[in-house]
Length: 351
Ligand code: SAH
Ligand code: SF4
Image: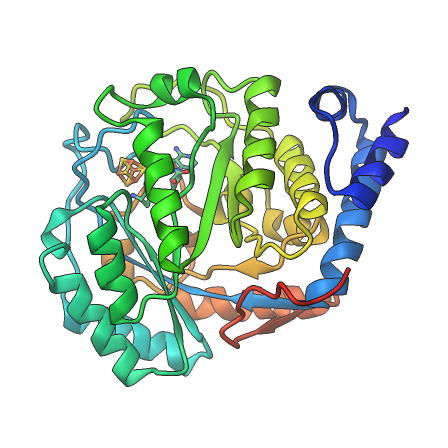
């Protein structure tokens, strides 16, 4: 089969033999990539229409007890000015986000145990009592099942925990030995059992990634069937062991996003900020390739400037309110519409 036939087969069957994913990933031409993106966008339109869901992300702590080799917040990076937002500051960010239409708040941070003993539970309760019409997404790393349950009971709806890579030998090259793929996977299963809408995902072009590891990731995402999938290019951070590694390919990221959409027509697929960092209006191209979520940053600028997972975040160059207006203008001038509903997973729609 040629690549166009493979793409059509994937759209029909939502899966391909691993050899065919390999062929596509290694031989796809620019023209075929645009064809793949068009198919992926058509499928997205059938499930979600032209609506793009907006989530307000609040980076509420940059303390992290982990030492992932790729991330600027790793504990060994002692040049970071660390901060924790108080409940009051987080609520003020939610208030501002609500006023500009956000109906999902994403609380993201390093793995910071300070919030584990009731503090985050209290914050979730308070946000839910002020904004019962909003969804809360957590992205705070690996915890016990009991703690995930406590936060779910307090009102958290969704949880983002990228698996980073489904290949153990690759995972070991990205993390110190105390961080294991087995525990990452245990967390993802626990989150799903509890009833969260769960997000997995990878960085494209992370060091030691190969076509084979990407195929294993596609198969994992197909089998595990997460409600959300976060995918963006790897971008080196100057204060990490991977500082001299190359940036992940923008076009390969688009290809993988489109493949994910065809494998998983209903998935909530964000056009990540990292896409804008590596290419101007990269998030718009990601939407044209099948993404249906954007996560404007509503962290106050004072904290945001110290939350650097990688070098030169695009969002740092604009204030939050300009960001959201720019995003809305960009979307509407391209035929999409930024909507501020809760934007839950739509599994019931036939495709
Ligand atoms: N501490 C939490 C959430 C914050 S990190 C966690 O690790 O799950 C969120 C995501 O940022 C990570 O999952 C990783 O995929 C991504 N990330 C970290 N460093 C990056 C880098 N250098 N380039 C691109 N993405 C990165
Ligand atoms: Fe911490 Fe997450 Fe960065 Fe790893 S990726 S160092 S867990 S903030």
